[in-house]
Length: 139
Image (tube, rainbow, N blue to C red; front, side):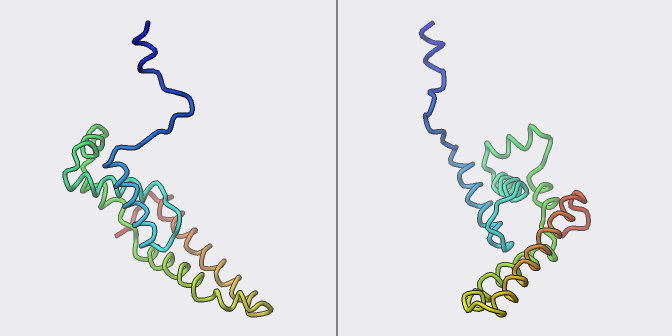
């Protein structure tokens, strides 16, 4: 009876991550930033896990193997198309470069805001098309 309670989770206790998963999440954040977005998507996390697994991180490699996946094949399949990367970087650049125009107010602010929204929408649509196609035509 005592053993049953020893392994029970404690409500409200923080949950940690393994060091390899923590590194994968950090790498996923880097991949998102390189693409020009502040949001980590599932493909960033999976690609980061596969990249680390390819470098022989045993637990991550084993997890992919249980799914029947080779890390190198996952990395290739989830390579972000250049168009998506270019649009993401353009959207990020616009947010930074047009900040002064937005702060100036008036017509300049309206133009800056519409340009940032347009570029962000184009990036989001490109990501949706790419992932909706299952990544076909990527690379």
